[in-house]
Image (cartoon, rainbow, N blue to C red; front, side, top):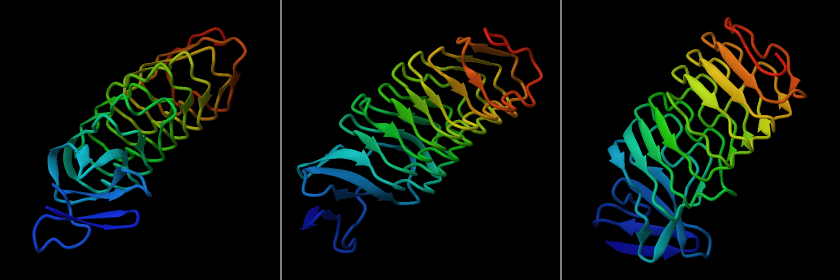
Length: 244
């Protein structure tokens, strides 16, 4: 394999027919500025099964999953993100309907956030490990297929519509450091049976649990929390907590 360089870009050639910007094992990469790090920028839409991006290539270390890198890669089932990656950018895995499992490394530090729509419409995504995430952005898991979700202890912000429409999610325990919950963050989670909201949350926004038709129990641990309008619309069960 030969590499050709231009400011901020790396081009890879696997053979004489590939041309500039070719895919390396189904994934395209580029350098990040004048650094010795690189990020993913695109994938071959026919890529399938389990995928692991290359962690190092010709002296460049993989540091980020770039914006829209795996958009519409409809046959990928599992992603192993290597240690060393510190950022996942916007829409990185948008509309990957066969993706069921993704492993996020510890090098995604607490200052790093999951961005807008990172896993939106990943309808079969049932599991994700997020050891060091503090911020989950808007729409991050909207209409995903999560059945369980272990939110990291350091999470402080859950964005607007972050878990909207996860119809297979049955329980949700929000970590004790959580401060902010975005609008309709887990609306229409129709299998959700119970939710625990910690005392650190000072406002439960409008419609946040609306449409969670199986919900039976909500534990609200603060007796001073502000509760928005129609938070429990279409919640037929009993909601319990200091304020309810």
